[in-house]
Length: 356
Ligand code: NAD
Image (cartoon, rainbow, N blue to C red):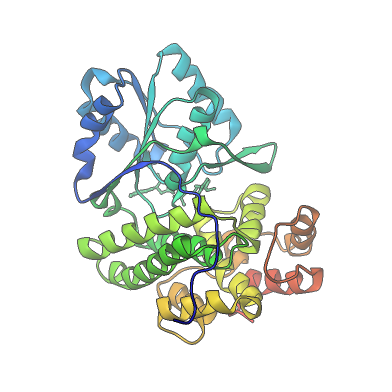
């Protein structure tokens, strides 16, 4: 037999997943299973009504709701949540929302080691990772710690039906970005690559169907399944240039997370493509195309995403600063990181041109 499997390391992150339509109904059971008596339900201000309703299903076991989660996990918000944790003698966390809400639960768990039950409502994938990015004084710092990883994830397809189409598209491309960079990670391995290829394919198929009919439960289920797989990728292997640039754009310039990933991904992929033939073969299979970078650009743009960082609020002056910030603290990346090439990449993404 040709090919064969070379030696590799695979790190699995422990966690329990309950997947399907309506699985949030199992939340009281899951809270009971962990023996929790006084949970804090966290959410963003926009999803406070959902958080209150969900707290209601827990009766006395929900001690409080904190609906102050914000994007990029500002430390001052975590400190306010910590006051509630202490005052209410909280013994567990329930997060219902996207990556911002999960980020707040993780930040509290890092400080307290409280168990977390997360019900994701976007495709960001944070619930599958032991990673937390916190923002303080305009800089976003990332760290990894076993206390950060949620213990239980309830993937309820019904919670994603309300995710607006535009956010569904960009959040879905955010998930695809995790899968793409996992395929060419330095510590890539066949288990994670299998999940990446399946996850990317599922998401790319689901997004046009969701765009056409946002309440298409089958497509929503496929997208959430893809988000789960791509989240595992993000939590299992190291990311590269694409995530580094997006991290800088989010932390330093406060650009919106999923939208930024969407605008940058085709460019970062085109930049790395000549150096990652196996990853490109997997992407061609997953996306059914000869040109994955172009296909991702066309998919996102065709579904209405904003492809110009300028229109996402990046100041023109930042274009010259970003290569320096990326190179100051370089990540491993399959293609060599050179300032002129990086400058070209950023300029193309700024203007919303197609990938080079
Ligand atoms: P988000 O959580 O900020 O959500 C965006 C907005 O959409 C919020 O107002 C939210 O309340 C609303 N929303 C979410 N789901 C909804 C739904 N189903 N229906 C209606 N409204 C809904 O967006 P995001 O892109 O999921 O998360 C971004 C944040 O997550 C960033 O801070 C990013 O750094 C972080 N993140 C972290 C990791 C990690 O592993 N640490 C991974 C991915 C993202």
